[in-house]
Structures are given as structure tokens and as C-alpha cells.
Amino acid sequence: MRMDESQSLEWYHRYQCIYGPILFCFVYWSIQLQDLSQLLDARSFLVNFRGTNVKEIVLSLLLKSVHVFWFLILPTIIHGPTNFTNLLKGWAAASAFGGFMLSMLFIVSHNLDTVKHVPPPKKGDGDWAKYQIETSSSWGGDKGSFMTGGLNLQVEHHLFPCLPHNKYTDVQRIVKEECKKEGIKYVGYNTITANFWDHLVFLKNMGKPKQA
Image 1 (spheres, helix red, strand yellow):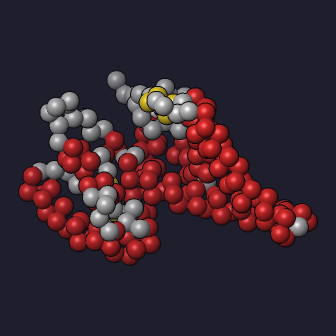
Image 2 (cartoon, one colour):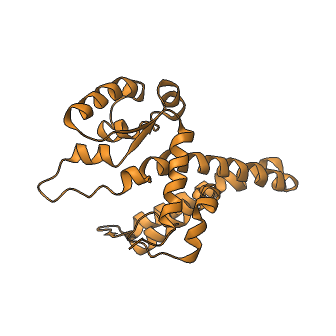
Image 3 (cartoon, helix red, strand yellow):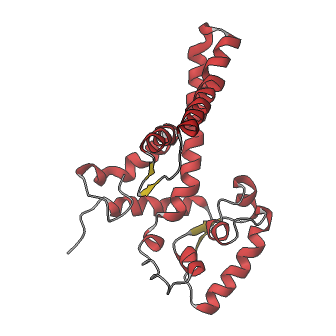
């Protein structure tokens, strides 16, 4: 998927607004493969690891094995190999739904036309809080915060990561008031569906050639 203008534009990106939400269901596999790739390459995107030793790598691989054993092998031992197909169906459905919801909560809040094209602050001359607000979006209120642990209010989540999430909606009112006073753009939605729709519009626009 193409989420940033620095990425090369391919022909299939034209349809990413359609297949993107489907790929969200496979984020579990993406994370697992990415973990292994970064561990073995000692690199996370543009950041190189320093000090990761062999013992730590072995420990990480061992814990990955425990993860597979816990979710697949142990249930097969308990319920018998004849139920393995049913086990896979349930596990696949749960991981697909969980992956879709997790992707929704994070991707839709930071990949919108209204927040993606904010220029980064210059070194030594930037406002960190202002940048966090203008590159994130929030949706919903008390109910959404209760159901997502506060992840629906990404602006407040970034500004106050250690604050209990049940306080986010109270803080949101203050943040909005201060943004209005300071002329800072605050992107907020009443529902996640409105936020998600704008995300699909963003994906569609990112799949188009840049207009001259």
C-alpha cells in the first residue's frame, strides 16, 4: 500500500482503496514477519539496532516459538488433531477481525489528506505538541474511548500517553479550546465511520499520479 508520497507509485495502488481494508485483516501475519525480518536484519526501517546480542536474538525466537505453541499446537494436543481444521477457522477469524480493528484504530487516525501533508517542524525550531495535534485525528467520545481504551482519541493519546484513558474525553475539551485560541487545526470526527471514509478517500488519492 502507498501511504506516503515518498513511496513509488505502482499501477495496483489505483485500487488500494478497495483492497486496503481487506489487507487490514492480515496485519497479524505482517507483524509476525516484520518482527522476524527486523530481528535478523538488526534494523527497523531506517533505524539500525545497536547492542543486540546472540542471546537476545535466541530468546526472541524462542518466545515466538512459544507463541505458536500456545495458539496452535497446545489446543491441538488438548482437543485432538481431528479438530485442527475447526481450530484454524476460529483462530483465522479471530486474528482477521482483530487485525482489521487494530488497523482501523491506528491507520485511520494518521492517514488522511487533512493530517498527512503537514510539513515536519524544523530542527530546533518546531512545536512538538502542535505537530502531534495536526498529524493525528480523533473520533467519538466517552463510548468510543471505553470500547477502545482511548485509542479513538489519538490526538489526546499522543499528547498525554500516561493519562488514564477515561480522562481523555475531559482533556479533549480543553485541547480543542486551546487549539481554537492558538489557531491550531484539530481534526475530529463524531464517528469512526466518517473517519474511515476519509481514510478511503486518502488511499484513493494516494493511488493517483501526482497532478502537475
